[in-house]
Image 1 (tube, helix red, strand yellow):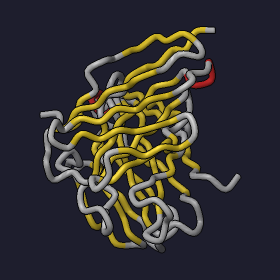
Image 2 (cartoon, chains in turn orange, red):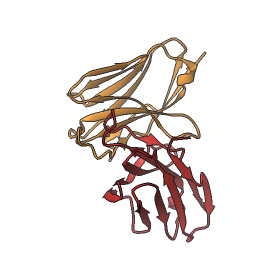
Image 3 (cartoon, rainbow over the protein chains, first blue to last red):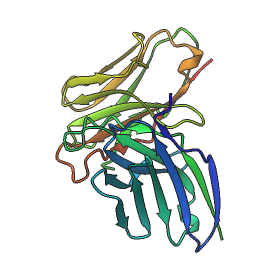
Image 4 (cartoon, each protein chain N blue to C red):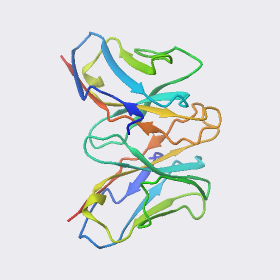
Length: 115
Length: 116
């Protein structure tokens, strides 16, 4: 059973517009969430994270929102740029603050930003 | 290059053969992880070391798989008697208990295994 779900395999957005990538999780023990970005032929790279004590974290053009009651998080990219085209993975972890680092990943969403 | 490096980048082998992958983490990182990724899936956790101690193993890691990190630096992942279902990208990642962002892992480019 998938504990972290990204139900949209792909998303296409026009340059300059907002990209919204969604992620749902089922395990209420998860208390830390991360987004990774992956380009072809490269390993995933860390993008942004949020702990369960917050509902929003912002870093430049990237904002992650967490809705604990709905077990849902989303990544907003504003404005979207062609260089943002990549596969985005949502990941979750337990034991924040003493994390074992065993991240559970979703299947990913492929974002295409068109000029 | 001071990132995570993996070798080889691509391995093609026949079913039943043994293969070994090597991972060199970022030097100051004390944690090292192995993940496996198949087409259309996200990375799946296999095992994790803190220094030289293997602290967690996934149920995915059958007894044909063994990982070591003998001196708390580089790590090897060996797959014995490979099966076609072992074909995947094997990702290594490292992290630090004193890292600024808990849970942040730094991934290598992966070792792609093809079992014929």
